[in-house]
Image 1 (cartoon, rainbow, N blue to C red):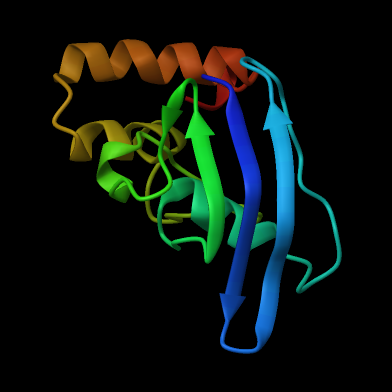
Image 2 (cartoon, rainbow, N blue to C red; image 1 turned 180 degrees about the vertical axis):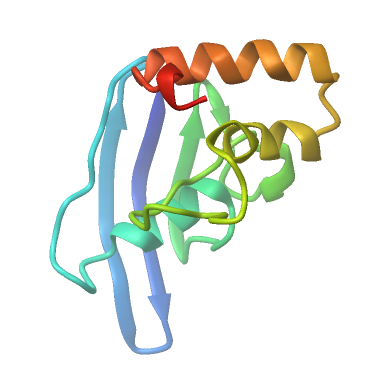
Length: 127
């Protein structure tokens, strides 16, 4: 994963300020957790990163590329929320493979990536 940088990102919904001047740099390869009370802007910050929300002000960079107004499908960003099962009717392998299948990754490559991801999370025994 590339470096992620929020530079002065603000997001307002009418009179409600969801993000107030967020300046944050996450180094390449870092594991980062957003923790805070309900309504503090965690989800909004992730939605701005994914391109699901446009910031009211500021700039977002992934690597050296400004992504502030780039379409979500062109960012190669995905989110997993706190809920334990996104698709409870699907197996662990199918849940991991789903975004790869949507992107039409060849099946043999998809299987390889699923195993790699599961191993990296110490979850290959769940496959």
